Image (cartoon, rainbow, N blue to C red; front, side, top):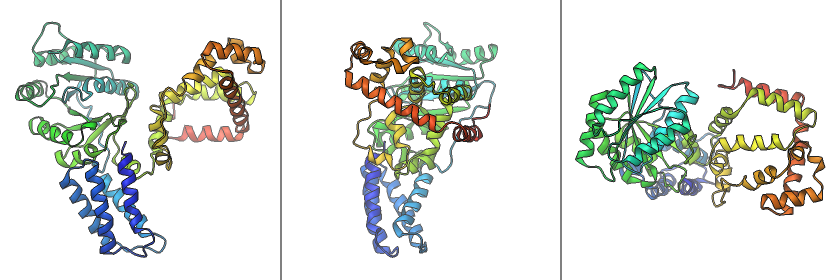
Length: 446
């Protein structure tokens, strides 16, 4: 995500490196390059021009301190303006109402139904809500079936009416059902089309008027670039939606939609989808996204994802095992599962400052742990708990059983031994201090 834009912006700032001060000439040269980078990323032309004009005005009005280089100051100004361009402040979802009603809108193929499942999961697991999903795509049975499959995975119910072709009535009946059964959030999935048409707009406008939702979220595929912005404007003119959801930000997107859409429709980006898994949903934070665009990483989001997987009881159990040098392959496997739950591996790595650029051309496969898991699963229960008994013949059997070779098995066992030694070194006061710090973080107290 944003890899090409990040690289181009970095090259632009190099123009100011070695310069003693900011002048109209070197700023103009830098911002000419910045504007090209934004346009190549499919950012709306007017948005790109206004952005660079604002940066220029602020840069020329700054006095460069002795301790700050002109290029560093320019990065700071561009960072702040990027954050403002994308909304400035984080916008939360409106869950007022009994029940709160959320209407989903967007074109077919934008990821609307999948995001509906993701949102339900997030509201259930992170906000403690009881969502009810509503199937209002009366034209595609496959869409209703998809919603039911997603709901089953999340563990939430779906309201649908077989044979009904009236999405307004279905949505209204669903809200009544939610009130009777004490569901506190109703998420209405609507029909999409391959392109904006009058029939589609009339229908979703009728649903809006019939249920008076607290939130109307417009779901847009960020891979479509500037077309996404144009579609958002058409939907907003008719629906006056309350927020934008950008899907497929983990793909090879140029980022133009994320940078343009807020300015064009004057509505906040509330969520982003970063993968196919149901947990691949993030609240949109303009400041953090600006950090990532400029190659500064996003440690806060990385820590938040780690916090979601942190289990205090499990951590204490693991500490005792490490102190007694009893950390085994079952524990090793458990740690791998936790890392996998945090999301796309390349996306996680890019959140570490300086790593994003280094791994830009590196293919990090989400199945990277598969061979490790296969090797561990090929061990007997005794071998997992007592790694010291893994002699040559046992290793040969494990290699055959896991579809790997003896070198891979030996490498994993060596890595495991090194990990166990390292973990033993940080037990005691260091481990207790780290655990205390983790518990003191927001969201870690229980």
